[in-house]
Structure formats: structure tokens, C-alpha cells
Amino acid sequence: MNILLTNDDGILAPGIAAVYKELVKLGDVTVVAPADRMSGAGHSITVYEPLVCEKLKIEDQFSGYSVSGSPADCVKLAIMELCPKKPDLVVSGINNGANVGINVYYSGTVAAAMEAAFYKIPAIALSAAHEEQTDFKNAAKHCVKVIEKLLPASFGGVLNINIPQLSKGEPKGIKVVPQSTMGFDEHFAKKQSDTGQTLYQLTGGNHRDKDLPSDTVALNEGFITVTALGFDMTDYNGMKKLHQIKW
Amino acid sequence: MNILLTNDDGILAPGIAAVYKELVKLGDVTVVAPADRMSGAGHSITVYEPLVCEKLKIEDQFSGYSVSGSPADCVKLAIMELCPKKPDLVVSGINNGANVGINVYYSGTVAAAMEAAFYKIPAIALSAAHEEQTDFKNAAKHCVKVIEKLLPASFGGVLNINIPQLSKGEPKGIKVVPQSTMGFDEHFAKKQSDTGQTLYQLTGGNHRDKDLPSDTVALNEGFITVTALGFDMTDYNGMKKLHQIKW
View 1 (tube, rainbow over the protein chains, first blue to last red):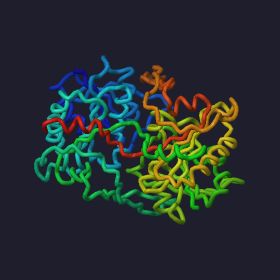
View 2: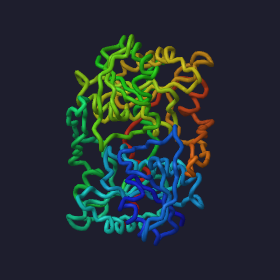
View 3: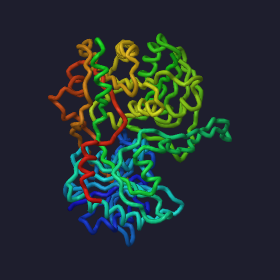
């Protein structure tokens, strides 16, 4: 199996190194990842400048391509130019921080997987809930166990997997749960710069979702979450309403 | 009606000025838009640095807030800090270039509207098909005519409106059509930089979708397209498959 591995925390992040070590047990892994930390990159792509691509060897870990762009850029470039063969599977992560609820929209990790799905390649986004010291080695083992369960089902599209905080103990199990769309509570801290400019720093971000059977709730309860994601954003209920308007 | 107006081409772009002139006929308009051109920004947000916010007066046009961030950042900051009242409607655009098919994912214009929907504010993304000389004044008139048709229906969520190339004549009508998920054909042009780095420039991008009743097809045929977009990305068919796995 040919696996393309990317992430949004950058090619030097510990999460990608940890999952690489586990993924090589499943197949040939090509690493193509952003040169820099791209958290919050969402599904951004680079349209005006060319991407700078460098081959790197990270000592005792892996060789790979570093790309001066977003996670989605990396997947495009990997599929079209860098991978020796069209990948059978694209893996993105392990992200440092959960990607559940509407965070899925801001997530470069998920966007990379979504980009692969545009090319009809099955893709898996991996994220670990944020901790002061995330145990990526253990998280990677859990991720690959889930992937091994998934592979025989020959799924298509994107699967979003999140690992709970492991410092609180081993995961309570695996839950297949929908994405929460409840949003979260956040605010901006306002201050003045030394030169008199007004600055706003985004803070907070607690999920509002407390009760529903969703990715955010299950993850907070200590379960590994698995969610299938699609990319037809059409709201078919909303469409019915639009069809009633006399245009 | 309190309207928040943003875009992804930046506060100085002609598209936002053109639609501002039309929108003030419908209500009080607050402009909060990126300081720079943010095309391809997708649903990126700024998490590590504070946003720099400046009040601008653009001569003979409008006053507004310029923000050193993405379109989604602008909407967050506007709703939480800058708008005098919670907006009744968020309008994003007019983008210079269509946002149909999977471009919807890369689009900062649509992401801004989606961000508003997270706050349960109805939102409309406006885009005009790319032309050498886009007639934003005429495009804005068409946009606001569509908005006037929509308002009595008290829609929720996100509506994605695209205006066809107007140099080819007036639009043939308005079509309510789903988002195409067919993707497009694109490639990278490879070259070496003066310093020996390998560079890849993304080019192409013709939509593969030729036949289906979709946003890409209808727009190419010369229709104004209207699509309702949702933000629950859960793939419920995919979920059924996941539930069959013995975890």
C-alpha cells in the first residue's frame, strides 16, 4: 500500500514523526508536509506564488518533502508531482490539538484529507487532544489500530479520527459520532501596540456542545472518535426553500 | 436592517465598494474586511498573532475596518467587537472570480459567510466570474436584486450566489443549483529559482463538471446561480458503514 503522509503542524512536528513510525508497518510512506506550522490554515491554498519544495532527511526518522505552503497545497503537489505512485491512502496528522466540531473547518489537518478526497483517494485525518505534554507515540499506536480496523471496510471519502487526552488514562473505547455543529464560546482580548495600533488576540474556544452524541462530547468523555466527513456542502433542506421563491 | 459586509479580496478591492453602494439601500452597512488580498484563504483563521485593526475612510466610498487577517477572522472580530449591533445579515464579496464547485472550499468569501452561520446569522457569499475587466457595478446590481428576492423568505444558513461573465451579455436568468463536487483539472508548472530551489506554480483549474445540473455548469451557461450551503460535514452514508465495523 502506498501511503502519503502530511500534516498541518509542519514537517518537523513530533506528531508526524510518531505516526510515520507506525505507518511504515502498513506500507510505503511518502512524507510531504508544510515547512512551517500551519495551524488554523483551513482549506487555504497558495495561488499567487510558487511553492518552494525541498527534500529533507530528518535524522533517525524519515526523509520527506518540505513545502512552503498549506496542507492542501502539500496534498495537491504530492499527488500531482512528488509521489512515486498515486497513493492508496492519505494520512494527515497527528495534529497537536483536537479537530472536532466546527474546528473541522479551521483545520489544515482535515483540509489535507479533504483535498485527497477530491482526487478520490481515501483519506484519514488524525488529531490528538491538546495537552501540555502530548504522548504522540502512544497516540500514534491508537491511531494505527483504528486505521487497521478501517482498512478492510474499504471506505471512501474522509475519516476524522481524534484521540482523547492520554494523560488521563487509556481511551475508554472508540465511538462513531457525527460532527458537532454547535460552535464554541470565544472572545478577543483587546490591547494597544507600542506604536498605538489596536490589536485583538483570539482567546477561549470552549465547545458549547455538552449533551449531544457528537465528536466533541465523546472526545471530552475520553473516547477515541471516528467521524465520516463528506464534501458536498449543498444544504438540500435549504434548497427546497429556495425552489419555492418566484425567481 | 444591520448588515456586516466583508470580502476576501481586501478592503480596497473594487467588488466590495460596488456592492456597498447597493447594500446601503437595504440597511446600515458596517464594513470589516482584510487589509490584504486573501484569495485562496479558505476557512483559515489567525491563532498565533493578534489581529491589527485600523479604521479607514476610503474617499467617496465608505468607512470601514481593515483587519490583518482572513475573511473568517474579520467576521469573528466584527460580530464580537466591531459591529454596533449584532448583524441581521452578513454579506461577503463581491469576489473577483467565481466560487462554485469545490472552489467553495478554497474560498475565503464563502468561509466568511460560513463563519457568520456559526453565529446563527444569515449570510450570503457573492462572487462574479473572472473577466479581464469585471463590471462590478452591474454585478452588484444583480446581486442585490437576488438578495431582495431572498430576504422575504427569511432564510437561515449560507447562500452562495455567483454572477456569470457579464461581458457576454446580461444573465440568462437565475438558477437554484447544488454545488458540484466533481473537482477540476489542474497541474503544477515546475521550475528552478535563481538560487537553485525547486518551485511549483499551480496552474489550470478547469472544472471537470460538464453535464450535471450544478453551480459550475449553470454559471458557465450564463445563469446567476444560487446554492444553499450547510456546515454539517458529517457524511451520514459513510457513518452507516462505520457503524457496521466491530470496534
